[in-house]
Length: 244
Image 1: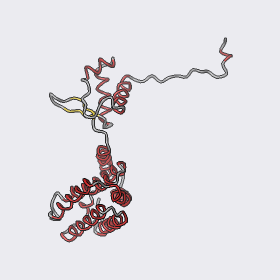
Image 2: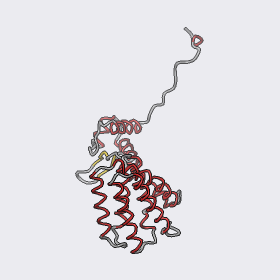
Image 3: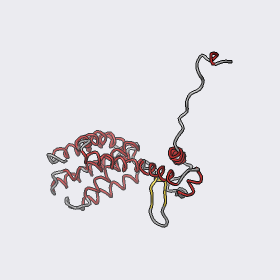
Image 4: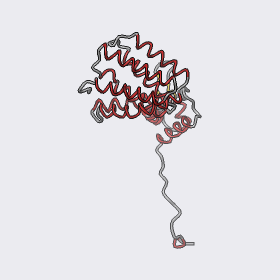
């Protein structure tokens, strides 16, 4: 048989991965497949270099890439090392919020753009929350609004309570991706910080929160949607001219 017998060559070049990529991809696959569990400590750099047959420098570079991707975290100290991070929608929301915050700060995206997307998501999320909420979620929402009722408008805890309530509404929707985005967008936009806030505006927003929670508790999607729209419209009316 000669090469002329082939109508097309069956051979193709295969890309040979660099040692760092092999280490990184095997650890990444072990995490995603659940072979290495959340919170579990990875072997030491010395042990990994021995297992993979590569240098400690190669292992260190691979671990650094996995840290950058949010899959592991490095903990210093005697009991430290490389630990697998929790991979869920809460973690995703936190990471997404930090990334968007950086983009807003450097001017790659405008504050208003993030605020508009938050409003787009809040209305469908509150409808879903009214349909899917659990009693534990309702109890937590009540606890938040009860704390809001006893807090003055200039209390430092007010922005945190606002983020917690809206994030919880997102979580109660039952859609974890939507919940992560609502959580992230509230962290970035922090509506309370950009309001022309006084005692009257603070009291009014708390009453609106109460109406939203009441509609969710009664599992009334229409009432929940109206209460959320009223709330968001009120916030828009009292937003400072240039929140950036």
